[in-house]
Length: 84
Image (cartoon, rainbow, N blue to C red; front, side):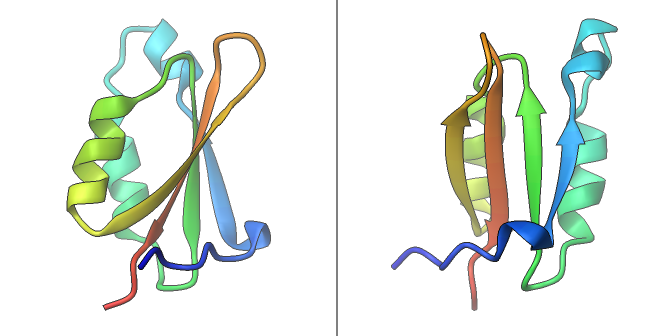
C-alpha cells in the first residue's frame, strides 16, 4: 500500500536545474537532503528532465514518489519515506 503523502507544507524544495546546467552532479546534494528527512517530511526535486534513475534508486530505498510535469521541459518529483 502506498504511503499517504505528507502535507505539502512539510516538503522542502530543491531545484537542481542550475546545478545540471553547470555540469554538477546533483545526487550528492539530493542524498544529503533525503537522508535528513523526518518521517513526516518530504523533498521536492525540480529537474530539467524526468530523473528516472533517481526515482528508481530512492524507490528501492523505501521512498514513495509522485511525479508531475512542470513548465516546459521541467519535472517536479516529490519524495517521502514509506512507513516501516
